[in-house]
Amino acid sequence: MKIHAFITARAGSKGLPRKNVLPFAGKPLIAWTIEAALAARTLDRVFVSTDGDEIAKVSEEWGAEVAWRPAELASDTALPKDALRYHHDAMSKDERPDVIVLLQPTSPLRLPADIDACVDAVVQEGWDSACTFKSADTNPHRAWRDDGGQLRPFIENSNPWAPRQALPTAIQLNGAVYAVRTDVFFADSSPSFLVGRAKAVIMSSERSVDIDTALDMRLAEVTKAHLDAEGSSE
Image (tube, rainbow, N blue to C red; front, side):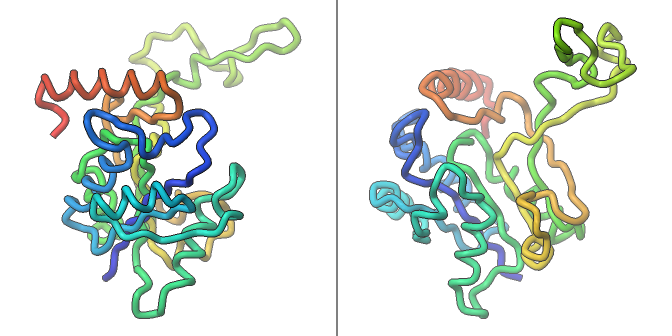
């Protein structure tokens, strides 16, 4: 069974220009994801899907293969699934993976073990897909909506004042790892990576940082330093 990881890193970041190659804790941001992927025991090949020369150069320096994608698949509105289909179709039949793993370079605190847990769920446990989640920042039973000045619970008939322990557990995708069976993935016409029978792999909120802005970058570096001091980032 062939298992390929694709790190999606387009050049046109608007919120934080050159985000994927900016320094983070002493390395280019994308290097943290490449290193985690190369250290994972379950992956056969690690590609960086990009349209940018600088990203490609840095990625090759850190040991990844480069998979070039056209500009129309690297726009603000382009879907990662379409880019992965493009790379998959460009491979010979003998090269095509049985399982695809999507990794975002903006999640530098994910560990090789997080990648392996998602792949094992698909390969060893028989799930069609597995993705990393964290505890929800806000339980939806405590969310509100404003109906023209009338405040109502977002979930009808819920009790936002209930003790935390009385509320159902809520989780949210953190974007760090997606693993999918290729046949099920591309047979599904939606943009979702939660295809077929899907499993949630839980990561801690601290390691679930996702970097979109300069402030995110600074907060993530502080978080990493804290985790390193506690010995909980390995």
